[in-house]
Length: 466
Image 1 (cartoon, rainbow, N blue to C red):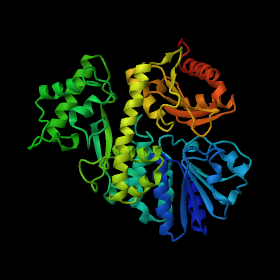
Image 2 (tube, rainbow, N blue to C red):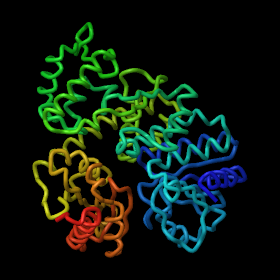
Image 3 (cartoon, one colour):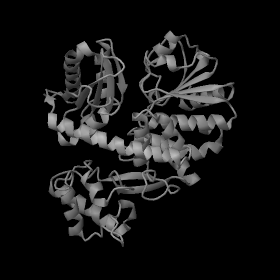
Image 4 (cartoon, helix red, strand yellow):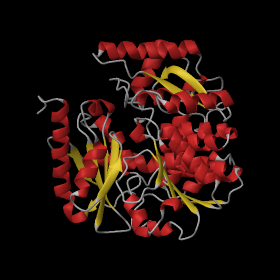
């Protein structure tokens, strides 16, 4: 049995179901999964309902209905099969659609997981799309949603573009259908559809360009020096998408020269980006990165179904509500970032950490941690802890690092999973971003254990590492 066989088996099980419940994660990838699967299933005229959970754990398992429906766990479940077993779910009742590390379990639940087959840069939305396409080729229109889910789950970040089946099958299907546009060797930058060009450059830190990154005035002077027109007729500030190709080339060349002069690599200056020609210009739905941020805002503020409605085409009430959440989302994250910088982190041998208490929602601490890295010591992973509103005895841990640190042998998913298990907690994620729940009483011991594991990972990759 191979990955394609798993996809086909899941599609056959779905086609034979009388009714289906989708249990999905609340981030951009999970929301995209739900929208892909629910639409594909509805087109088969099978009754389907959806439940979103922010984490599959004992507290959320009661949300899984105790009925005869086929239950599809998407973007979660691979590492929590023991909970399904404890709930009494039988093999025929479950399909797991995931891309996280799988947990050994007595019952052999149907699982479609790209990770065991070596596809480490495809998200669960990508797996969901392949199942949808297996159900019916008409679902090719849903490739766009899978691109958003993959980009939102940072599958394009490490290689500055999607690779493997996510690129060769899913992106190409979107291009073939006509609702995905590929921009090769574009600027590796966020906010190209909505931010004035100088702000896109100033808020970008991958790569970090001294004098421009984190420096809006420096970015303005850089563009002025190049003779780039920054305003349209009438005074409206232009966004990257609105620049002509000559201006884009001049900016990228100018950035490359500055990086070289600073002794830095230019290997992360270009990226393959994915735009959506069927969306309105100058909106965050215009490209995959910003679209995913809209979905994440919906999920982080407990309204993932609003994100799902937008993926289904709602550009009225749902989109207006999402815009409001997005603005609030950005404001709170700015506050969190400033708090991290003002408070400072404790730096130990192999990581840096801090505890934000109950000051910020636990759903966004990981985002703030990732943003803070470029302004702290980016050579060490950052670990941020916060209180869990539903359980005062638990602490949520979010960790982030950079691609360059991952290349040095770091695997945050393994580090937090192994360390949290030693204290009766649980964790998961990816090499570059991971999270865990641990007992509040074990916070310091957990930090020390993660520090030790990271040291071992560094040493394994480079024996001379100290």
